[in-house]
Structure formats: C-alpha cells, structure tokens
Image (tube, rainbow, N blue to C red):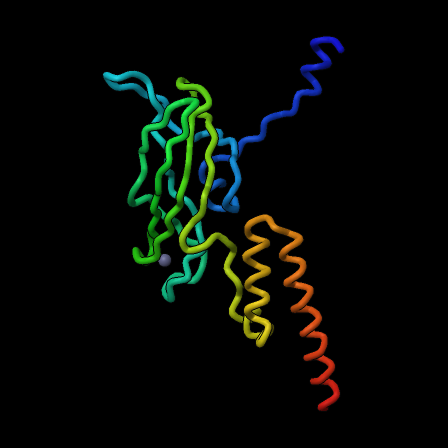
Length: 185
Ligand SMILES: [Zn+2]
C-alpha cells in the first residue's frame, strides 16, 4: 500500500464541541472535543484553561418547564495538561429561574499543550442524563412506569439491548391492558 493509500484508509477523527458534549452525550464515553480549552501559560509553563461556555438544557422548574440557558457556577477554568487526565466537577445553573442545577463529573486532557483540542470523559451527571419524559407518557404507561424508567436508564447509557428487554415487557403488559379494556366495553 502506498503512503497516500494508507493516509486515505486512516479513520477520520470526529470532534464534538464542549457544549454538545455536556448537553447531549450520555455518560461513560471518551469523546474528542474541538474547543476543550484555551491554551495559555503561567510562570510554571504552558497549560490549557478548561472552557465552560453556556449550554442549553431542559429545566423542570415550574416557571421554566422547557429548554433554558444554563451557566457555569463552579468548577470552570480547570487547568489541563496533555497526556494526563484531570478529574473534576463542573456545576451549571439555570439562568432563568436561578434554582435548578446540573453537576457533571469529568476527566479531561489536552491533545497538545499548544492547541485547544482534547478529550473529555463524562463519568456521570446529577440529575441523571436523559431527555425529559413527558408527564402524559408516564400517565399513559400507568402501572408499567418502573419497567419503562429502567429501560429509559439503559437507553440513556447506550445499553440498547438492556433497554429493549424492559420496553418489550412494557409492550406485552400494555397489550394485555388494552385487551382487558376492550373486553370490558
Ligand atoms: Zn429554570
């Protein structure tokens, strides 16, 4: 294989922005980030200052109940290095109600001490990661709520087969509910 061909076969590295990563990447994945930090230096040498731009998340506070801007209130500006993971927490607060918070547990390292790219691992977040579940849906599912939520937790963590098992139970139970309902009419 020529050098040119080897170059073409090489997998293209995919990058996410730090906002995309925080907003919509499920935990337990190491992701390449295009704008992880701002390369800078102090008397001890170069380092990267972790970026924590504002992000958009669902806020379930009564006065918000929708997607709102969240701003970093603690853990921002962490000093990062290349070839060495730094472990830390970052907390965001809803800019609208100023009450709802989201905390991320992260590990991050720079790709190169002079560049803004790097990689970030999300151990988890509190409240738990996941798109909001409409209350109408929860009501509709009724007695199978717990099974459904277990499936949802699996799905949010990328465990598709696990989620399928729970969802299938929900569908089978609901099938019986529907036929009992039909017989009683
Ligand atoms: Zn809010």
